[in-house]
Image (cartoon, rainbow, N blue to C red; front, side, top):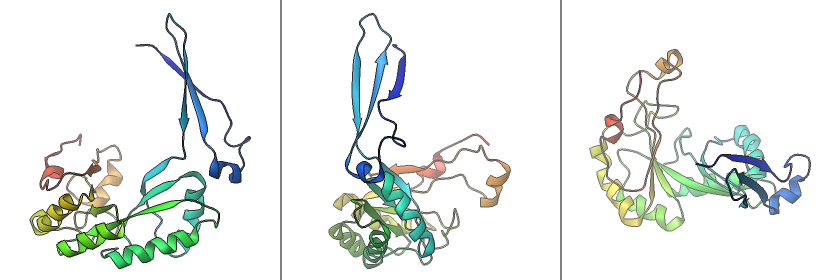
Length: 212
């Protein structure tokens, strides 16, 4: 396989102002070490952030401008207190995020809902109609603000099937069983974060094995 040497043709810090960066693209080129020299350029449009926590209140006001400066879109995690479990809550949250972005920004927050044992088929349908992109499944007690999460995958199977029908994404907080504080003693323990678009898949997280 040919080796590659990557380099940027512009310095994004020194040569592109914030205003220019909002409407420009960066070019990244690579050269292959082969018998027939060739140069190919790849234009990178403003990237997307597929896992973003902006929280709420002062934290939101602090984080969103930095995100909007560098990213075109971001999938917003719903584990607030209280969690974002309904479509109206997601739409209101989206407006707070938009209000915190610079006025000239084209940043698009892509909203998700927090899946619970009681998420209804009707809520899934409302979410799809409103432009919500996915539901996030947090196993109850598995991570930050997950107390309202799923306790038994069987309880949310109707919602998962409805998600598949309307083609909403499914995001899963996947980790090994055990006390969350144990991670402090084993920082290299494997955590599986699974982004799944085909439901239902109950038991999948439990079936994934990682090094202790």
